[in-house]
Structures are given as structure tokens and as C-alpha cells.
Image (tube, rainbow, N blue to C red; front, side, top):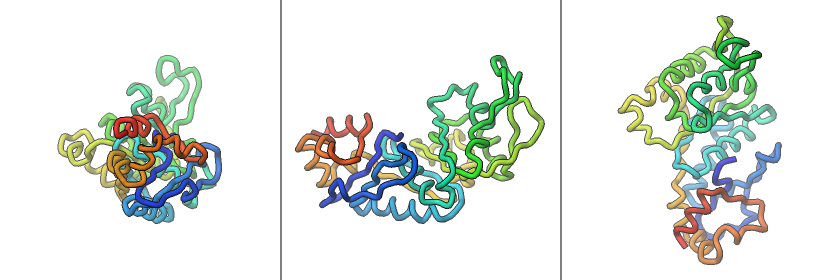
Length: 242
């Protein structure tokens, strides 16, 4: 779950002002959008859900990129299928290719049995590639091939595998800088950014009138009786602003 499972901004918001997910328990976080900025995010996410194309979500750490990705998935025609994610920062570089594309037994030391990758597991559903801007260039090339052809090969195999997974990518890096410095392939960027959603920073959201009142009256504990949850990043920001 993302570090910020609900976005509250603007005036007059209440815990009941929420669009609630359906499905598995981890998908049941309310998404509150009251300010113009967050209403725009919510409206755009609904439009993106109806179009089966790759999407790119941009935003700083803790702004709710995974929440928006899950929201898009649940509203999409793929919503009844699985939602999978790969968090680049949580996986060692040497294991990332296997995690994405799978491997055959004996492909590397310790690979005692075949294992499908996230692309295979997400077939028919949605795959979130979190922190795409930190993916190694060699894997960016293989990912581009997958997006173009819908085909890939497991590590240690010459057999091509086909998978139909909707790709949603997310990153907190400055895309312009990443493209200029060559850490993000331009061709991959254009493949992923068929639709782009920008999330406002927490420091902007938490300076809205509603959040100023919440912070003054005890921070996120004010909403403890609702189904809205807060992660470490959002809690840290509210403490600094009090």
C-alpha cells in the first residue's frame, strides 16, 4: 500500500466524502478529492481507466501513486483480474530481471526451479512498475521490447512468452532531467506516457485550509474513525507543519 492512502485537499471535506474501492481488502482505501487539483487527478484517473493503454503517474514520495494506480485498475475492464506491482527500490538489481520476466531452472545460481515473472502473473490484469526512473538501462530496453511486441523470454530460455498486462509506471524522479541525463530512455518514456497523471506534492495538499484545520486539531488522528489511513510520509509532513 502506498504511503498515502487518501488525499484530502480543499475546504468542506469530511471522512464520508470518499469514493471507495471494491475488491480485495488492500484495494479498499478511500480516495477523497475535494480541491480542484485532486478533483482533476480523480477525473483523469477515471478517464484513463476506460482506455486500455499504458499510463505514467508522476509525483513525489508519499503522494499516493500506488493508490491512483489501484484506482485505475479497479475501474478498468481489467478490474476483475489481478493487480501486481514491482517496486524497483525493494528488489536488488541482479534479481530485477528475474522478478519481471521470470526464469527457468538453472538460469542462475540458486534457481532450482522455474518461476514465472510478474508479467506472466499479471496476464489479463495490471502491472504497476514503481520507480521506473531507477530501472537499469539494460532492463529498460527489454521492457520496451515487451511493450512493443507483448513478447519476452524468461531468463535461461529461448522460448518467447506472450503476456497481455496493462502497464502503469510511476516515478518520483524529474523526468526532464532523467531524459536529458540518459537514465531514462526516451523511447520507453514515450511508450509509457500515453497518458500522464501528475500528483500534487504533500506540502501543497497539507497547506490547504482543510488540512491546516486537521493539523491544528491533532493531525490525522482527527480522521481515526473513518476508513482513511495515513502512511509514514504523510504523518511526518503533518508533524513538521504543526
